[in-house]
Amino acid sequence: MTRFLVYLLLLSTLPASAGRPNILWIFIEDMSPLIGCYGDSVNADKTPNIDALAKGGVRFSRCYVPAPVCSPCRSAMITGTYQTTTGLHNHRSSRTKAGAINLPAGITTIPQLFRKHGYLTFNSGKEDYNFVFENSDLYSIKGPRRDFGAWRNLPKGKPWFGQIQLAGGKSNTKKWNDKVNPDSVTPPPYLPNTALFRKWHAHHYDTVRQTDDDTRKILANLKADGLQENTIIFWFTDHGNNHSLRAKQFCTEAGTHVPLIISGADKRIRAGSARNELTSTLDISATSLALAGIQIPSHYDGVDLFSPSFTPREYVISARDRCDYTIDYIRSVRSDRYRYIRNFLTDRPFLQPQYRDNRDYVVFLRQGHAAGTLPALTDEIFFGPRPREELYDIEQDPHEIKNLASNPAFAKVREQHRSILAEWQLRTDDKGQYPESDAGLREVLNQWKDKCVNPEYDRIRRSGSQ
Image (cartoon, rainbow, N blue to C red; front, side, top):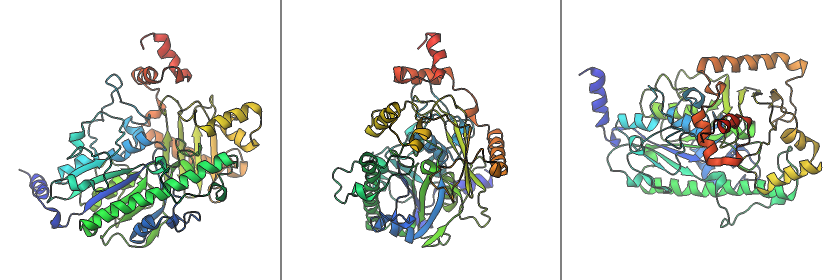
Protein backbone atom coordinates (compact mmCIF):
# COMPACT_ATOMS: atom_id res chain seq x y z
CA MET A 1 0.00 0.00 0.00
CA THR A 2 1.46 3.38 -0.96
CA ARG A 3 2.01 6.15 1.56
CA PHE A 4 -0.74 8.14 -0.13
CA LEU A 5 -3.27 5.33 0.32
CA VAL A 6 -2.24 4.96 3.96
CA TYR A 7 -2.77 8.70 4.39
CA LEU A 8 -6.26 8.52 2.86
CA LEU A 9 -7.17 5.58 5.08
CA LEU A 10 -6.07 7.41 8.21
CA LEU A 11 -7.81 10.60 7.14
CA SER A 12 -11.09 8.80 6.51
CA THR A 13 -11.14 7.51 10.11
CA LEU A 14 -10.54 10.87 11.78
CA PRO A 15 -13.46 12.17 13.88
CA ALA A 16 -14.71 15.74 13.67
CA SER A 17 -12.94 16.48 16.95
CA ALA A 18 -9.61 16.00 15.15
CA GLY A 19 -10.01 19.58 13.96
CA ARG A 20 -11.47 19.22 10.52
CA PRO A 21 -14.29 21.74 10.18
CA ASN A 22 -17.79 21.16 8.98
CA ILE A 23 -18.44 23.02 5.72
CA LEU A 24 -21.93 24.46 5.16
CA TRP A 25 -23.13 26.08 1.96
CA ILE A 26 -26.19 28.26 2.45
CA PHE A 27 -27.11 28.33 -1.23
CA ILE A 28 -29.79 30.85 -2.20
CA GLU A 29 -31.80 31.09 -5.40
CA ASP A 30 -32.36 34.09 -7.65
CA MET A 31 -31.21 36.88 -5.34
CA SER A 32 -29.25 40.07 -5.91
CA PRO A 33 -27.11 41.67 -3.15
CA LEU A 34 -29.81 44.08 -1.90
CA ILE A 35 -28.44 43.61 1.61
CA GLY A 36 -27.48 45.97 4.40
CA CYS A 37 -23.84 44.88 4.59
CA TYR A 38 -23.56 45.41 0.83
CA GLY A 39 -24.54 49.05 1.24
CA ASP A 40 -28.17 48.83 0.18
CA SER A 41 -30.11 51.76 1.67
CA VAL A 42 -33.59 50.21 1.54
CA ASN A 43 -32.46 47.14 3.50
CA ALA A 44 -29.91 49.03 5.61
CA ASP A 45 -31.26 47.68 8.92
CA LYS A 46 -33.47 44.90 7.59
CA THR A 47 -30.94 42.09 7.14
CA PRO A 48 -29.42 41.80 10.64
CA ASN A 49 -28.59 38.09 10.45
CA ILE A 50 -26.80 38.26 7.11
CA ASP A 51 -25.03 41.40 8.32
CA ALA A 52 -23.94 39.61 11.51
CA LEU A 53 -22.61 36.72 9.44
CA ALA A 54 -20.54 39.20 7.43
CA LYS A 55 -19.31 40.87 10.62
CA GLY A 56 -18.01 37.52 11.80
CA GLY A 57 -16.39 36.66 8.49
CA VAL A 58 -15.30 37.99 5.12
CA ARG A 59 -17.60 39.78 2.69
CA PHE A 60 -16.61 39.57 -0.97
CA SER A 61 -17.93 42.62 -2.79
CA ARG A 62 -17.28 41.53 -6.39
CA CYS A 63 -18.25 37.91 -6.78
CA TYR A 64 -19.68 36.65 -10.09
CA VAL A 65 -21.27 33.42 -11.28
CA PRO A 66 -20.17 31.28 -14.26
CA ALA A 67 -23.78 31.24 -15.52
CA PRO A 68 -26.73 33.51 -14.66
CA VAL A 69 -29.25 30.67 -14.43
CA CYS A 70 -29.73 27.84 -11.94
CA SER A 71 -28.72 24.51 -13.46
CA PRO A 72 -25.57 25.53 -15.40
CA CYS A 73 -24.31 27.50 -12.40
CA ARG A 74 -25.01 24.64 -9.99
CA SER A 75 -23.52 22.09 -12.38
CA ALA A 76 -20.34 24.17 -12.56
CA MET A 77 -20.05 24.61 -8.81
CA ILE A 78 -20.70 20.96 -7.92
CA THR A 79 -17.95 19.88 -10.34
CA GLY A 80 -15.63 22.84 -9.74
CA THR A 81 -15.35 23.30 -13.49
CA TYR A 82 -16.89 25.65 -16.04
CA GLN A 83 -20.14 24.17 -17.32
CA THR A 84 -19.07 25.12 -20.84
CA THR A 85 -16.05 22.81 -20.56
CA THR A 86 -18.01 19.79 -19.37
CA GLY A 87 -20.98 20.22 -21.75
CA LEU A 88 -23.40 21.10 -18.94
CA HIS A 89 -24.11 24.61 -20.23
CA ASN A 90 -27.68 24.25 -21.52
CA HIS A 91 -30.29 24.85 -18.81
CA ARG A 92 -32.24 21.81 -17.66
CA SER A 93 -30.42 19.29 -19.83
CA SER A 94 -30.03 15.55 -19.19
CA ARG A 95 -33.56 15.11 -17.81
CA THR A 96 -34.45 12.05 -19.90
CA LYS A 97 -32.61 8.88 -20.95
CA ALA A 98 -32.58 10.01 -24.57
CA GLY A 99 -30.87 13.29 -23.71
CA ALA A 100 -28.67 11.95 -20.90
CA ILE A 101 -25.28 13.60 -20.30
CA ASN A 102 -22.55 11.83 -18.36
CA LEU A 103 -19.72 13.66 -16.66
CA PRO A 104 -16.46 13.52 -18.63
CA ALA A 105 -13.83 11.09 -17.38
CA GLY A 106 -11.80 12.50 -14.51
CA ILE A 107 -14.47 14.92 -13.29
CA THR A 108 -15.49 14.21 -9.69
CA THR A 109 -18.15 16.16 -7.83
CA ILE A 110 -17.25 18.04 -4.68
CA PRO A 111 -19.51 15.91 -2.40
CA GLN A 112 -17.75 12.79 -3.68
CA LEU A 113 -14.36 14.32 -2.88
CA PHE A 114 -15.50 15.14 0.64
CA ARG A 115 -16.82 11.61 1.12
CA LYS A 116 -13.55 10.17 -0.16
CA HIS A 117 -11.78 12.07 2.62
CA GLY A 118 -14.00 10.89 5.45
CA TYR A 119 -16.73 13.51 5.42
CA LEU A 120 -20.45 12.88 5.56
CA THR A 121 -22.48 14.87 3.03
CA PHE A 122 -26.03 16.10 2.60
CA ASN A 123 -28.09 18.43 0.48
CA SER A 124 -31.35 19.83 1.79
CA GLY A 125 -33.28 21.12 -1.20
CA LYS A 126 -32.65 21.73 -4.87
CA GLU A 127 -29.96 19.94 -6.89
CA ASP A 128 -30.61 20.83 -10.56
CA TYR A 129 -27.52 19.23 -12.12
CA ASN A 130 -27.29 18.82 -15.90
CA PHE A 131 -25.74 15.36 -15.78
CA VAL A 132 -26.65 11.80 -14.84
CA PHE A 133 -26.00 11.03 -11.17
CA GLU A 134 -27.12 8.80 -8.34
CA ASN A 135 -28.04 10.80 -5.25
CA SER A 136 -26.49 8.13 -3.04
CA ASP A 137 -23.13 8.55 -4.80
CA LEU A 138 -23.00 12.22 -3.82
CA TYR A 139 -24.80 12.37 -0.50
CA SER A 140 -24.68 10.26 2.65
CA ILE A 141 -28.40 10.76 3.19
CA LYS A 142 -31.25 11.72 0.89
CA GLY A 143 -32.88 15.09 1.52
CA PRO A 144 -34.85 16.24 3.34
CA ARG A 145 -36.22 18.86 0.99
CA ARG A 146 -36.23 21.81 3.38
CA ASP A 147 -34.58 21.51 6.77
CA PHE A 148 -32.80 24.35 8.56
CA GLY A 149 -30.94 21.78 10.69
CA ALA A 150 -30.39 19.06 8.10
CA TRP A 151 -27.07 17.94 9.63
CA ARG A 152 -29.08 16.45 12.50
CA ASN A 153 -30.08 13.60 10.19
CA LEU A 154 -26.45 12.46 9.82
CA PRO A 155 -24.67 9.86 11.95
CA LYS A 156 -22.59 11.45 14.71
CA GLY A 157 -18.83 11.54 15.03
CA LYS A 158 -17.64 12.68 11.61
CA PRO A 159 -17.27 16.09 9.99
CA TRP A 160 -19.73 16.97 7.28
CA PHE A 161 -20.09 18.95 4.09
CA GLY A 162 -23.65 20.10 3.61
CA GLN A 163 -25.85 22.36 1.56
CA ILE A 164 -29.07 24.05 2.64
CA GLN A 165 -30.95 25.54 -0.28
CA LEU A 166 -33.06 28.65 0.32
CA ALA A 167 -35.76 29.93 -2.03
CA GLY A 168 -34.35 33.47 -1.99
CA GLY A 169 -35.88 35.52 -4.81
CA LYS A 170 -38.49 32.79 -5.32
CA SER A 171 -39.75 33.05 -1.74
CA ASN A 172 -43.48 33.29 -1.15
CA THR A 173 -43.77 36.51 0.85
CA LYS A 174 -47.56 36.54 1.35
CA LYS A 175 -47.16 35.93 5.08
CA TRP A 176 -44.16 38.23 5.45
CA ASN A 177 -45.22 41.28 7.48
CA ASP A 178 -42.33 43.73 7.07
CA LYS A 179 -42.98 44.52 3.43
CA VAL A 180 -41.36 47.29 1.42
CA ASN A 181 -43.61 50.10 0.21
CA PRO A 182 -43.40 49.89 -3.62
CA ASP A 183 -43.50 53.68 -3.86
CA SER A 184 -40.26 53.85 -1.86
CA VAL A 185 -38.18 52.02 -4.49
CA THR A 186 -37.12 52.79 -8.04
CA PRO A 187 -36.67 50.09 -10.70
CA PRO A 188 -33.47 50.02 -12.77
CA PRO A 189 -33.44 52.83 -15.36
CA TYR A 190 -33.95 50.46 -18.29
CA LEU A 191 -37.39 49.51 -16.93
CA PRO A 192 -40.44 51.80 -16.85
CA ASN A 193 -40.86 53.53 -13.49
CA THR A 194 -44.48 52.47 -13.11
CA ALA A 195 -46.48 50.96 -10.26
CA LEU A 196 -46.17 47.52 -11.86
CA PHE A 197 -42.38 47.52 -11.95
CA ARG A 198 -42.10 49.17 -8.54
CA LYS A 199 -44.27 46.34 -7.16
CA TRP A 200 -41.91 43.68 -8.47
CA HIS A 201 -38.81 45.58 -7.37
CA ALA A 202 -40.25 45.89 -3.86
CA HIS A 203 -41.11 42.19 -3.92
CA HIS A 204 -37.45 41.34 -4.43
CA TYR A 205 -36.57 43.39 -1.36
CA ASP A 206 -39.20 41.42 0.57
CA THR A 207 -37.63 38.12 -0.49
CA VAL A 208 -34.23 39.32 0.74
CA ARG A 209 -35.75 40.11 4.15
CA GLN A 210 -37.39 36.71 4.33
CA THR A 211 -34.10 35.07 3.36
CA ASP A 212 -32.46 36.90 6.24
CA ASP A 213 -34.98 35.30 8.60
CA ASP A 214 -34.33 31.86 7.07
CA THR A 215 -30.63 32.48 7.68
CA ARG A 216 -31.41 33.29 11.32
CA LYS A 217 -33.06 29.89 11.76
CA ILE A 218 -30.04 28.04 10.37
CA LEU A 219 -27.58 29.97 12.53
CA ALA A 220 -29.75 29.41 15.63
CA ASN A 221 -29.75 25.66 15.02
CA LEU A 222 -25.97 25.59 14.61
CA LYS A 223 -25.60 27.46 17.89
CA ALA A 224 -28.08 25.20 19.69
CA ASP A 225 -26.11 22.16 18.55
CA GLY A 226 -22.77 23.64 19.60
CA LEU A 227 -21.46 23.65 16.03
CA GLN A 228 -20.73 27.34 15.52
CA GLU A 229 -17.05 27.05 16.40
CA ASN A 230 -16.40 24.12 14.08
CA THR A 231 -18.48 25.06 11.04
CA ILE A 232 -17.35 27.27 8.17
CA ILE A 233 -20.29 28.88 6.38
CA PHE A 234 -20.41 29.94 2.75
CA TRP A 235 -23.45 32.18 2.16
CA PHE A 236 -24.12 33.02 -1.50
CA THR A 237 -26.66 33.04 -4.33
CA ASP A 238 -26.76 31.33 -7.72
CA HIS A 239 -27.48 34.47 -9.79
CA GLY A 240 -29.38 37.75 -9.72
CA ASN A 241 -33.00 38.87 -9.43
CA ASN A 242 -35.48 36.66 -11.27
CA HIS A 243 -38.02 39.39 -12.15
CA SER A 244 -35.87 42.22 -13.45
CA LEU A 245 -35.64 40.73 -17.01
CA ARG A 246 -32.12 42.03 -17.55
CA ALA A 247 -30.78 40.07 -14.59
CA LYS A 248 -31.46 36.32 -14.33
CA GLN A 249 -30.47 34.47 -17.53
CA PHE A 250 -28.34 37.32 -18.86
CA CYS A 251 -24.62 38.07 -18.67
CA THR A 252 -25.13 41.53 -17.20
CA GLU A 253 -23.98 42.95 -13.89
CA ALA A 254 -27.47 42.41 -12.47
CA GLY A 255 -27.52 38.81 -13.68
CA THR A 256 -24.06 37.68 -12.61
CA HIS A 257 -23.09 39.76 -9.56
CA VAL A 258 -23.92 37.90 -6.35
CA PRO A 259 -23.21 38.23 -2.63
CA LEU A 260 -20.62 35.96 -1.03
CA ILE A 261 -19.87 35.76 2.68
CA ILE A 262 -17.48 33.25 4.24
CA SER A 263 -17.61 32.99 8.02
CA GLY A 264 -16.09 30.63 10.56
CA ALA A 265 -13.58 30.17 13.36
CA ASP A 266 -10.51 29.77 11.17
CA LYS A 267 -7.53 32.10 11.47
CA ARG A 268 -7.47 32.50 7.70
CA ILE A 269 -10.94 34.06 7.82
CA ARG A 270 -10.50 37.59 9.15
CA ALA A 271 -13.69 38.57 10.94
CA GLY A 272 -15.28 41.82 9.79
CA SER A 273 -13.14 42.18 6.69
CA ALA A 274 -14.18 42.97 3.14
CA ARG A 275 -12.40 42.00 -0.04
CA ASN A 276 -12.78 43.73 -3.38
CA GLU A 277 -10.96 41.34 -5.70
CA LEU A 278 -12.84 39.83 -8.63
CA THR A 279 -13.99 36.39 -7.52
CA SER A 280 -16.10 33.60 -8.98
CA THR A 281 -18.49 31.25 -7.25
CA LEU A 282 -16.23 28.54 -8.70
CA ASP A 283 -13.77 29.73 -6.05
CA ILE A 284 -16.28 28.57 -3.41
CA SER A 285 -15.79 24.96 -4.52
CA ALA A 286 -12.00 25.18 -4.40
CA THR A 287 -11.90 27.12 -1.12
CA SER A 288 -14.29 24.68 0.58
CA LEU A 289 -11.91 21.81 -0.15
CA ALA A 290 -8.86 23.81 0.91
CA LEU A 291 -10.35 24.81 4.27
CA ALA A 292 -11.07 21.13 4.92
CA GLY A 293 -7.48 20.20 4.11
CA ILE A 294 -8.40 18.44 0.86
CA GLN A 295 -6.26 18.91 -2.22
CA ILE A 296 -7.94 20.89 -4.99
CA PRO A 297 -8.13 18.82 -8.21
CA SER A 298 -6.08 20.12 -11.10
CA HIS A 299 -9.15 20.47 -13.34
CA TYR A 300 -10.86 22.92 -10.97
CA ASP A 301 -11.36 26.39 -12.43
CA GLY A 302 -11.63 28.01 -9.00
CA VAL A 303 -8.88 28.97 -6.57
CA ASP A 304 -8.40 28.93 -2.81
CA LEU A 305 -9.34 32.45 -1.76
CA PHE A 306 -7.29 32.14 1.45
CA SER A 307 -4.14 30.62 -0.02
CA PRO A 308 -0.89 32.41 0.91
CA SER A 309 -0.12 32.42 -2.82
CA PHE A 310 -3.54 33.79 -3.83
CA THR A 311 -3.39 35.98 -6.92
CA PRO A 312 -6.46 38.08 -7.80
CA ARG A 313 -8.26 37.26 -11.03
CA GLU A 314 -7.90 39.66 -13.93
CA TYR A 315 -11.38 38.77 -15.17
CA VAL A 316 -14.40 36.50 -14.66
CA ILE A 317 -16.15 34.78 -17.56
CA SER A 318 -19.91 34.17 -17.54
CA ALA A 319 -21.92 32.21 -20.10
CA ARG A 320 -25.56 32.00 -21.18
CA ASP A 321 -26.78 29.24 -23.46
CA ARG A 322 -30.17 27.58 -24.03
CA CYS A 323 -32.57 28.25 -21.16
CA ASP A 324 -35.50 25.82 -21.22
CA TYR A 325 -36.72 26.17 -24.84
CA THR A 326 -35.15 29.59 -25.51
CA ILE A 327 -31.90 29.28 -27.45
CA ASP A 328 -29.24 31.93 -27.00
CA TYR A 329 -25.45 32.07 -26.94
CA ILE A 330 -23.90 34.89 -24.91
CA ARG A 331 -20.50 35.29 -23.25
CA SER A 332 -19.20 38.06 -21.03
CA VAL A 333 -15.88 39.17 -19.60
CA ARG A 334 -15.97 41.12 -16.35
CA SER A 335 -12.65 42.83 -15.78
CA ASP A 336 -11.70 45.25 -13.03
CA ARG A 337 -13.59 48.17 -14.58
CA TYR A 338 -15.40 46.94 -17.68
CA ARG A 339 -17.91 44.36 -18.82
CA TYR A 340 -17.64 43.06 -22.36
CA ILE A 341 -20.60 41.07 -23.75
CA ARG A 342 -20.54 39.06 -26.95
CA ASN A 343 -23.93 38.20 -28.46
CA PHE A 344 -23.39 35.39 -30.95
CA LEU A 345 -27.03 35.11 -32.07
CA THR A 346 -27.99 38.57 -33.27
CA ASP A 347 -30.89 37.29 -35.38
CA ARG A 348 -33.19 37.33 -32.32
CA PRO A 349 -34.13 40.15 -29.92
CA PHE A 350 -33.08 40.37 -26.29
CA LEU A 351 -36.62 39.61 -25.10
CA GLN A 352 -37.24 36.36 -26.93
CA PRO A 353 -40.22 34.13 -26.12
CA GLN A 354 -39.27 32.63 -22.75
CA TYR A 355 -40.58 31.14 -19.53
CA ARG A 356 -41.74 34.46 -18.04
CA ASP A 357 -44.01 35.36 -20.95
CA ASN A 358 -47.18 35.07 -18.86
CA ARG A 359 -45.89 37.40 -16.15
CA ASP A 360 -47.69 40.73 -16.07
CA TYR A 361 -44.49 42.73 -16.56
CA VAL A 362 -43.57 40.81 -19.73
CA VAL A 363 -47.10 41.19 -21.09
CA PHE A 364 -46.85 44.94 -20.36
CA LEU A 365 -43.57 45.25 -22.28
CA ARG A 366 -44.79 43.30 -25.30
CA GLN A 367 -48.03 45.24 -25.48
CA GLY A 368 -46.18 48.53 -25.02
CA HIS A 369 -43.75 47.66 -27.79
CA ALA A 370 -46.62 46.78 -30.15
CA ALA A 371 -48.40 50.03 -29.30
CA GLY A 372 -45.25 52.16 -29.43
CA THR A 373 -45.76 53.40 -25.86
CA LEU A 374 -42.61 52.13 -24.14
CA PRO A 375 -39.83 54.52 -23.08
CA ALA A 376 -37.25 54.70 -25.86
CA LEU A 377 -34.47 53.12 -23.76
CA THR A 378 -36.67 50.19 -22.71
CA ASP A 379 -37.81 49.55 -26.27
CA GLU A 380 -34.28 49.71 -27.63
CA ILE A 381 -32.83 47.28 -25.08
CA PHE A 382 -35.56 44.66 -25.13
CA PHE A 383 -36.80 44.84 -28.73
CA GLY A 384 -34.17 46.72 -30.75
CA PRO A 385 -31.47 45.23 -32.98
CA ARG A 386 -29.16 42.97 -30.98
CA PRO A 387 -25.63 44.37 -30.93
CA ARG A 388 -22.86 41.90 -31.72
CA GLU A 389 -20.71 43.37 -28.98
CA GLU A 390 -21.38 45.40 -25.86
CA LEU A 391 -18.87 47.20 -23.66
CA TYR A 392 -19.71 49.05 -20.46
CA ASP A 393 -17.70 51.10 -17.99
CA ILE A 394 -19.17 49.69 -14.78
CA GLU A 395 -17.64 52.42 -12.61
CA GLN A 396 -19.42 55.13 -14.58
CA ASP A 397 -22.40 53.13 -15.84
CA PRO A 398 -23.38 50.41 -13.31
CA HIS A 399 -26.72 49.72 -15.04
CA GLU A 400 -25.01 49.16 -18.41
CA ILE A 401 -26.92 51.73 -20.42
CA LYS A 402 -24.23 53.30 -22.63
CA ASN A 403 -22.70 50.74 -24.99
CA LEU A 404 -19.11 51.78 -25.74
CA ALA A 405 -18.30 48.94 -28.14
CA SER A 406 -18.41 51.15 -31.23
CA ASN A 407 -16.79 54.17 -29.57
CA PRO A 408 -13.32 54.73 -31.13
CA ALA A 409 -12.02 56.00 -27.79
CA PHE A 410 -12.57 52.52 -26.32
CA ALA A 411 -11.33 50.48 -29.29
CA LYS A 412 -8.25 49.26 -27.38
CA VAL A 413 -10.35 48.19 -24.39
CA ARG A 414 -12.77 46.36 -26.68
CA GLU A 415 -9.94 44.54 -28.45
CA GLN A 416 -8.38 43.51 -25.14
CA HIS A 417 -11.62 42.00 -23.91
CA ARG A 418 -12.41 40.42 -27.26
CA SER A 419 -9.01 38.70 -27.16
CA ILE A 420 -9.52 37.52 -23.58
CA LEU A 421 -12.77 35.85 -24.54
CA ALA A 422 -11.39 34.26 -27.70
CA GLU A 423 -8.40 32.84 -25.84
CA TRP A 424 -10.61 31.52 -23.02
CA GLN A 425 -13.00 29.82 -25.42
CA LEU A 426 -10.13 28.11 -27.22
CA ARG A 427 -8.28 27.10 -24.05
CA THR A 428 -11.34 25.69 -22.27
CA ASP A 429 -12.97 24.23 -25.40
CA ASP A 430 -16.18 26.17 -24.78
CA LYS A 431 -18.91 23.73 -25.82
CA GLY A 432 -21.27 26.59 -26.63
CA GLN A 433 -19.35 26.97 -29.89
CA TYR A 434 -20.91 23.76 -31.17
CA PRO A 435 -24.58 23.13 -32.04
CA GLU A 436 -26.60 21.25 -29.45
CA SER A 437 -27.10 17.60 -30.34
CA ASP A 438 -30.25 16.42 -32.07
CA ALA A 439 -30.98 14.25 -29.02
CA GLY A 440 -30.76 17.27 -26.74
CA LEU A 441 -32.97 19.45 -28.91
CA ARG A 442 -35.45 16.62 -29.39
CA GLU A 443 -35.70 16.26 -25.62
CA VAL A 444 -36.56 19.97 -25.36
CA LEU A 445 -39.01 19.87 -28.29
CA ASN A 446 -40.84 16.87 -26.85
CA GLN A 447 -41.26 18.68 -23.55
CA TRP A 448 -42.11 22.21 -24.70
CA LYS A 449 -43.60 21.57 -28.16
CA ASP A 450 -45.06 24.76 -29.70
CA LYS A 451 -43.06 26.98 -27.35
CA CYS A 452 -39.94 25.98 -29.30
CA VAL A 453 -39.86 28.74 -31.92
CA ASN A 454 -36.13 29.16 -32.54
CA PRO A 455 -34.93 28.10 -36.00
CA GLU A 456 -32.61 25.49 -34.47
CA TYR A 457 -35.66 23.30 -33.82
CA ASP A 458 -36.61 23.23 -37.51
CA ARG A 459 -34.19 20.44 -38.38
CA ILE A 460 -35.65 18.28 -35.60
CA ARG A 461 -39.18 18.89 -36.84
CA ARG A 462 -38.11 18.12 -40.41
CA SER A 463 -36.60 14.82 -39.31
CA GLY A 464 -40.07 13.68 -38.25
CA SER A 465 -38.67 11.64 -35.37
CA GLN A 466 -39.90 13.54 -32.34
